[in-house]
Length: 459
Ligand code: PA5
Image (cartoon, rainbow, N blue to C red; front, side, top):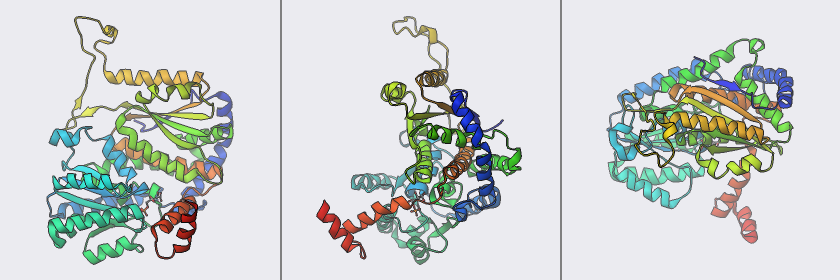
């Protein structure tokens, strides 16, 4: 079965025509990624990564796991942006919503819980995280490609100090795993000094394109997910794209990119990704990061936003139906997104029979709730389309490691093609430096004193 299908039947015909005219340029862009001749070519190591390096990296990770000689029941992932969003997308999508409360039943393989730090500067959150660590036997995976990002560095210093006090230096070193650039950055030096096991972030891929490398695979493996399936799903997409670009007619990767560009040229300013399971929120966070940081340059780019079904229909639905007509909406649909037990057996709920019909739901008796959820998405797609919002659909069969891996490969490639069509470098992020410099100035980092003084005068 095809892992990803693309549907543009609810995308206006005039925009389909504009999109079709862009297909040859999209194919050129795809070819330039494959040949590593595009803008930012030194950052294209993510393309075709599973086959080239991913599967062998997965074997190294499994080998490390088999030699890990500490007992753990919690994996703490420290990282921000591309260093944590991808693995969190998979872990949240496939974990029991009440995992910390329902015990072993809600967990995969190793049975470990996953917690996160280093993606904010909330002191309260760190205090509460330490409460959680106190009740568990943690291992820590600190992930930073640059090895110098402030948020994960601050969190890691605090957690390192906690781990050393609790376990002693020697055992703390066995419980800490670093993932970082092989050559640069403070994290690499720290790991070498303390003897942390280290996995590398390949130098030829940026953070938001790194989920299929050790960045995403190490925490997922430690938490009991099938990293092999994630890679297989991605490989399915890349294998298809490896074919001669000229023969790729109406490929979902190029179709999605050209439709987005056509929408943008028609004056759309925002893309809303609509999703039907609360657990998919982090997948959409990952998608927002990918597209926002890759495309938002030179005054261009669709602002990527999310909408959770059916919750947000009762808050944002009115705006989408009748607010400014500058929206594009993409529906991310899983035909089967079912709860499973720890043996992967499906667990389902039908609307029950009741002798009274006071709630007037008798007409739904015997139907699965999933059926209602899918119907709500279909109904909304037609309503929003009729309200003047161009709608696209990305459809997957089943929510699992394989389909999530396929979506990573699909979105990464489509995003790079889309940014190239727009004429910007998909792989840099020069705009994020401005806030960082101001932040260093205000904190008094050596070298930023003058900037700090001038900022303080303005605040
Ligand atoms: O996409 C990117 O490159 C960024 O969002 C990074 O992932 C993020 O800033 C974290 O960087 P690092 O892994 O160097 O700590």
